[in-house]
Picture 1 (tube, rainbow, N blue to C red):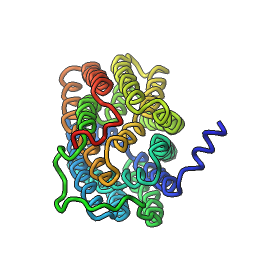
Picture 2: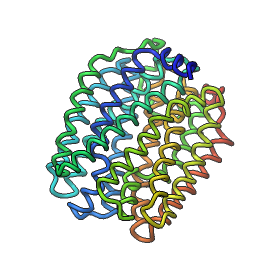
Picture 3: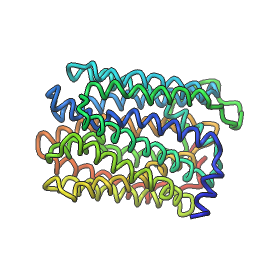
Length: 397
């Protein structure tokens, strides 16, 4: 325990500041996130297909922007400005959901929110990676995800209190602007990282051939995993479909986020000692099991609460490890580009994943949709464990 606290204290101030920013940002985001599917289905009368379309399109658009922002951050060597702009755009967009009177209005607000995320994500991850050594990457990304998930506990709890006090869904969307303002103030305190300043090619490198061979193989496995990894809003819709009330849905989301917050740092830090590929492969296999269980649940009882907690444990193991593995497989001078490609694949595949998931759900059943996701996750884990090797980052570059 003491060693763990000592390791956390050794992390640079930039890592802690980015973690604090993510805490408040997710407090704002997750204050409204679990309410969006409820708002769409119960107020705006939209179905799973509309939800799949909205989440798939906005994440795909965000992912394209993540690649562009990552490449531009590498070219300009200015990561801080992209991070600040991204948080400002997201903070402004979320309250706009409260003014939507049809699902296209929700779509527009969600698109603006995700575009803000697209601008900031790759530069922020590159900034975080540049702030620590290779032996602390799992710890740093795990701590960042822990702070992120801690905010995702506070947000739903605040929403549940507001719902209990009789505050409507539209008003809760408007209140999300308060923690967003704190995010902007904190982001202005960020400083540019000290990274190797080497002369890059005169043209911007967009082609995947510029990535190392292990990185390209990793992206293929990640793409397959993400094809079965639809928007988490379908988990919330699953709970609602089983008869869970709005207040309990946000509490279940808080439970998921709380478990992820507690275990993100220690589970991601395991990859510093036992290897990123092995830890991530095990996490993807566990993800397949979690999805299968969620599809098989017959009713909203204690097993559903346990499933949300288990899903949080799985996400705690994979989120930080996925990003730390990117840094292992790429040159630090192209950190923004590498994270841009990572985010492009992870987010871009959410469009077909969410559309397919929503279609399978509506045309067949939730079990068919979750089973498909479980199959993709299991196959991706096998591909990762058999084809990706760390230590040859420049192979094929």
